[in-house]
Length: 176
Image 1: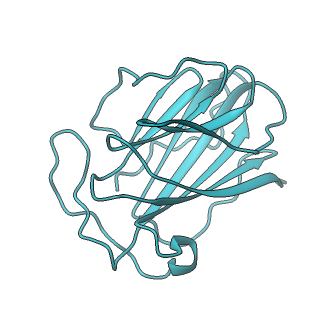
Image 2 (image 1 turned 90 degrees about the vertical axis):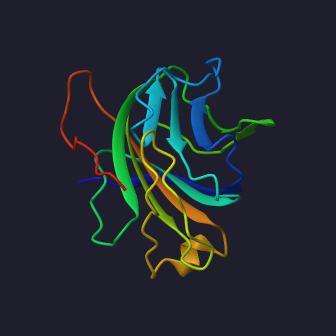
């Protein structure tokens, strides 16, 4: 049975349409990945593409003992990614202003799976897709006002350790 090990919440202002989570031991850069995906990843880092209309994001990061249970709530988008975390000290990247250390405790360095979920504030839209080749208006769903706390976007990032080659809990990701 999976259990929540640690959690922290903060607010961040994404820069250049990216919200980055990274291990402080790596040099950050924009990964060379497919810009048609919500999550851009490389060893030690994951970036979520965000609409240019997002000024402030409320984010909750959770460390789990194993694959966390799925919730049945609705989200504007959800994707999962696997990433190597070399040291285990995480920070959020503020593209134009450095980084913001976060006090989330991971069990150890190693291979982790991350589930990112996000919603946009219905009172702040419309929000236009930041994905390459898309210009559609993104869904804004009611019911997460408390998590949004007046911000443009709310993100939940759940992180758990996996063994190399272990694909349990994997999902292909769902476009937002």
